[in-house]
Each structure stands twice: as structure tokens, then as C-alpha cells.
Image (cartoon, rainbow, N blue to C red):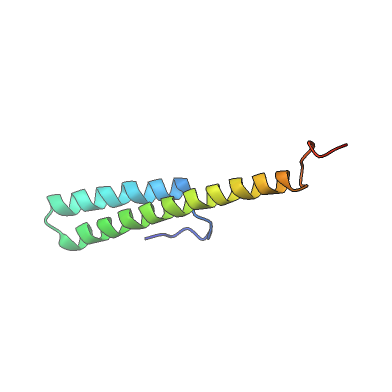
Length: 80
């Protein structure tokens, strides 16, 4: 399934897993290979979960950056 050694969710890797999962699911359906079909469905679901994780990570990084800027990080608005 996911051979990515990076533990941070990736939108690119998520899209790749969703696409490969769809291909395997479709091929398994065409060849009546339930094992391949199940593998494809699992890989697709893993890709969707990774996509959600990547979105959550992006949202966290954005919120963190805004908080740092608001409370003294790089905020130039607090200068007298």
C-alpha cells in the first residue's frame, strides 16, 4: 500500500494512491479478481485518508503561523 517513508501526509502521495487504487479496483472488476479489487479499494481508501491528513496538517501549519504572527513571532504591527 503506502511505501512512503515520510510520516507527514502528502497530497501528491494521496492522489497517487487514490489513482492506483482506482486502477486496481477497475482491473480487478474487469478480470473478476476480487483480491485485486479489494486491494484497490483499500489503497484508494488509504489515499483518501492521507489526503484528509495532509489537509489537516496544512490547516494546522496555517493556524500556527497566524498565531505566531499575532503573538510576537514576525508581527510588525505591535511596534510603538
